[in-house]
Image (cartoon, rainbow, N blue to C red):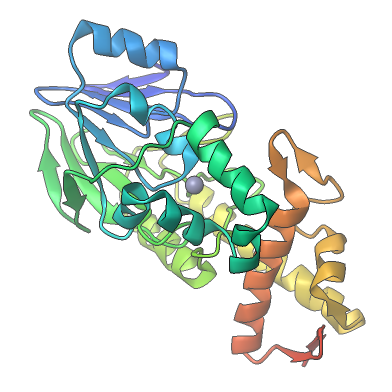
Length: 297
Ligand SMILES: [Zn+2]
């Protein structure tokens, strides 16, 4: 049933989007972190004994997918994610630009949230603080605020088990996602550098074929490096030819020439992440904008 277990800390691999790998803490308090794995596993756990607490690392559908199965459990999140859990309107605002929100994309996303991924507005019962140490019984958990993917993204360190759960800083070879309106590349790099300092024997992440890694900082460094590689390729391309954002998205620096992956529109994600890199490069003085074209300085 579990793909990794150490003391009361259990890891359940969850499959592909809109699922993720989940954590179950089997202790005096029974806790699920990011319960978006197979619902049959979650129902079985709940049938043995009620789940007391749901913790979401952040407010994305592939993490809260099965929260709805546990209306009696408390919900714990970081304060910067709480407004999205409280209001579907705020959640939409955090993902979509104003013109997208008022167009067909807005309606489509709203229907998706309500019908496909069971989003239910609710008031979180506890707001988790950076560095706080929480005891579930024998299992201790330190909360780490690691923004960048989303503003209130959390990672969790279990000192007794020496396990670090990195959530959506998921360490996959393809590299990180920072395409939401509220994503921030600089914050993400800072968060990853912070995780480098944690002495863990095992890293567990929320996505990816593997999900389970030896606690070797090389995996975090490789992940950070993908960000810099993307940026260098963008800068090289702009040095050769000033380009519009549409043209830059067509270069396929992040996703290659593949435009769709399952439910994901990769061309949209490519465009949004490249736009974040452009903002960063302009701020660093490496790129300037003339009309709708971006030029390397
Ligand atoms: Zn996410």
